[in-house]
Image (cartoon, rainbow, N blue to C red; front, side, top):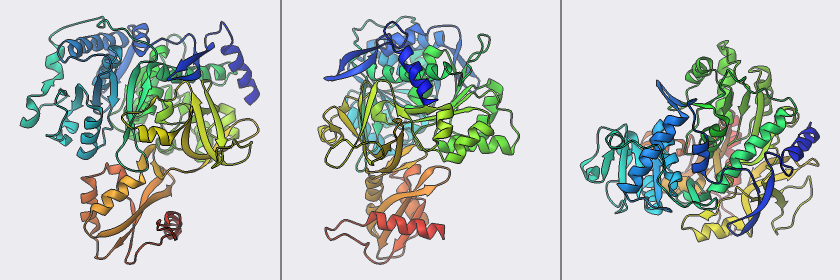
Length: 560
């Protein structure tokens, strides 16, 4: 099977073929890229104009054409009323509303950089991101308005409030309301702007092991290479009869159950729907019963989500004897699936499982595996995407042969330019053209990647990267905590949960501590498991806390 798909790749990427590759320069790096890709996201959106339904949210149903026209209108407002120019940042902070999609289309179509802010952030991280990105415009919904800092905001930033009826007095002078603005004009063409495939288009904030999230910058070509890589993977699979496309009288549909501020939601679900003319059915937040209802009523054909959500779906469908037979593909990412779940997607849902490994820094692609290859190698994350190269290196940077474990590094046409205003992070992350992933992996003889550990001090909970250092810093702000160590604890559903061991000189009120942390951390960052010690935590001779020892003890304790 692996060799059959490899031969299909060769046919599909050959000179004159739909996915022909060419060598281009991106950020000074020589990369493979898709020769026939749209040059920019603006071109992607415009080429997709049609009367087919595109974005569905509750009882709101917008076609591709309607979304394009709304985006054109908003783009003119941004340029003429808010002074947005090429290279300016436009921040988006909201749930998976249609306005998120329209704002993204508008911003990237006028040469601005769309900054997708995590909708689960609390005030501190929102303030940091706005101060870091200094957006010209912030498009934000009511829940995020309620968490907004009222001072220290960028002077030039204007706010467009979405689905909002209560604006604090401190923000009123900066704020306009979406519906009032959109009612002033009606446009169906974008403002003129000179755009290039290598122009910055997108900033997504990603958590590191310490400190505040940092903004990862991608150009139009980076994003489009990712989108066409998924198309190529699927076309190669189709050539081997692995997946059946919907017939012409039945539009393909995808369920948006993950947030748009992550690359799985923004890229693998939302942006990949344009060329495929897929309906994108959006959920406010994940609810498995609602997801099943939408799959049945909207005849959803594709669902891409972390293992926790696809596991929920399989469990609920079997327990409640649901008819979700329209699902043809169940994709994954963000965290590995247990091998049993891979088999259950095939047996219980009767759908083709696939998954991959990627990062915000790679625009969600990296490796991919589908169909029989995945069923035969459920622990693998797949083989390298067509526009990327991978290698495994030891601590000295020497490339390792198949079977030996080392750090997974990656380079190619979807890799970010770097981090916004963070030369220190760039120096730490890049080894020349190669991106250090922080993941420990090995390759088998056929080139399939197996990720086995992490170098970075991160917890990956249901696809959310959680920096242990940031959680430790919040814990240490609490008056009675003297030392803190945060680590990942295995979890059947989410992959990992947040655990912490703390040294306290006085008794801790857990409810009070949780309330303290929720004011400083997103809810998913607050430790679920907490071990309180009355003696200093164990350290190495050089003074470092023995985190691995504490994690192992926590796992043994929970197992018992």
